[in-house]
Amino acid sequence: MKTLKKPIVLSLLACLLLSANLQAQPCQGKLDPEWIKANYTKRETMIPMRDGACLSTAIYEPVDKPEGGSPVMMTRTPYGLKPYGPDEYASDLGTTYKNYVANGYIIVYQSVRGTYLSEGEYVNIRPVVSDNGCHVGSIAYDEDGMVIVDDASDSYDTIEWLTRNTKNNGRVGIKGVSYPGYYSTIAAISCHPALKAASPQAPVTDWWKGDDFHHNGELMMADCASFGGSFLVSRKAPAADGGKTRVRGMLPGEGENLYDFYLSKGSIGEIFKPFADSVVFWNDVLAHPDYDAYWEACEPTSHFTANMPAMLVVGGLFDAEDFYGPYKTYRDALAVKPDDVFFATGPWYHGAWRNFSYDHMDNAWFGTHSPEFFLDEIEYPFFAYYLEGKGEKPQPVWVLPSGESDPAIMDGVCTDSMWEHYDSWPAADAKGKKLYLRADGSVSAKHPWAWFKGRSYVSDPASPVPYFHKVFEQKKRDRDYMVGDQSFVENRSDVLTYKAEIQTDTTHFMGPVKVHLRLRQSTPDADYIVKLIDERPDGYQMLVRAEVMPARYRKGFTEACYVKPGKTFTLDYAMPDIAHRFLPGHRLVVQVQSSWFPLVAMNPQNAVDNYYKAVAEDYQSAEIKVLNGSYISIPIN
Image (cartoon, rainbow, N blue to C red; front, side, top):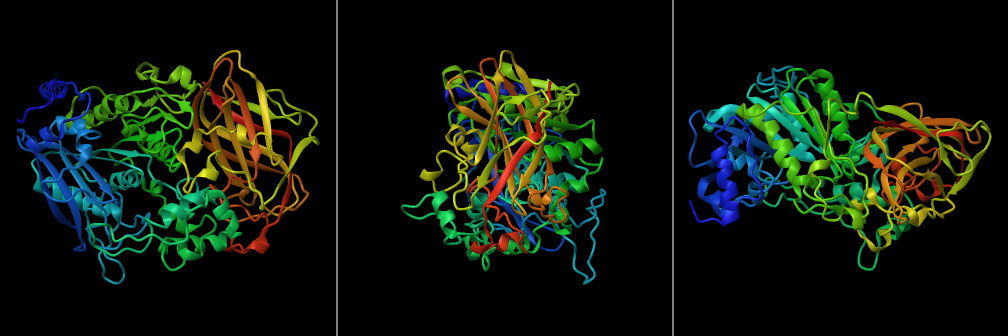
């Protein structure tokens, strides 16, 4: 063994020595890359799938192979396996995979079908079409005699190959964040008998209802233009660089900012013209504006069965990309496998639990050490229990709630003692509390009886509400908007702000936020963005949760149902879950608006044949009235 820095030597040796005991032993700190190279070998191979396509795979194996074999920890990804070469090791072996390396696991990374050096065709959020009733191992053929393949069958075939071609203990785990989280879900669906544990983390789950491209059917335009214009372009395969090119004209150029760049285009149709010949998935989006069989087939949790492995689902409370997926995945998995499904969440952005230096977003500070705690005390013990037979069965739910975020109070504060655990999520005793949005601008638990009263604003497509206070300085969407200060729009005439009394005690909100709006509008359609805000004593208005809902889907997502102008109607929807403490001296604030630009595409506020093909002439201003009887309902623990 090569000489290591002393603190890491002591920590590492402790991990290696104690890992032989019955209790799972996490490794504190990072592992030295030189130690990893001295104690692990790397091989790059192409693993054959049932249809003959071979998938690029990197396998890291301990030099000293234990009797009985090692557990396998796997990640399947569309983002490539850099660095390539037998002497070039992945940097995260010493960070987010440190506990598995220190305890002698076999570590496997694989590029999914059609990406980077893997053969075959890549299909974004490919539907599961193989038989998932624990028979994915049986080869099936379509009506043309072609072997049926999908990402579930690829997962199955990969695990089968690994169990036959490595010195393993017959137990495999899989984890990943975002797309790799999605592929962890899909692997679980494959039901390979050796796959004992899976951890979908911030998993892509439903691209129409809540992840990445859409929220409740409304286009998340900034993300779609940026991510779709690079990752989803047609590929040259196989290629070490992914064979990707960027669609030109989708991002601001020199001297331009995000807001004005998209506003100058005038319409959704004009903004996305460059996608037509470059992004195959965009053509699918155009063909399916409503929630139909196409989107249903792309959603993986409908394939969940009790035969799946144990599952630890992880999500960030302030995840700008995929905060719908974790809750959907957790609840659907729990419904079919209640004894072996676990959940963890904290005040993180997308994947922040892998960033050891993470402590804040915008000017909201959440303390230190939450990523290390998650990796050492939650994630690794989960896998050690199911793959090594060590330790005790994990707690069902781990939550690190947000709350105080003033940097003068929270900067540098260790959060280890702030974690909470529950038997379910939300807690069984959490009760919904209605908070009414009153015509006088207050938020109150007291019901207002003057139903005809309300507050009005005009939603003008020529001057939409900016989504973030830094938007005029930026060229791409900023994840910090998830907790961003909302005071910059409080005095806009097209934003209604409602304020509760200043808190005199602590209120612990946890669970989905339900919205009920009584509305009247002058146009056939409009978006409604409701924002739940924690106003600190220093004046910072921290966004806790917000979500968009178009009026045209108030009766269901399968078909647009436009509003009769001037007629009162109700709009009900749920915002993704929160875990937040409103503290004494703070104030709960709610804002209602009809644009959130350019995060969300500007609604034409008109009845159009296809929302995505709207042209400038389709856009019109809408007079909106929010009436008494509107409320939000939040579970209080």
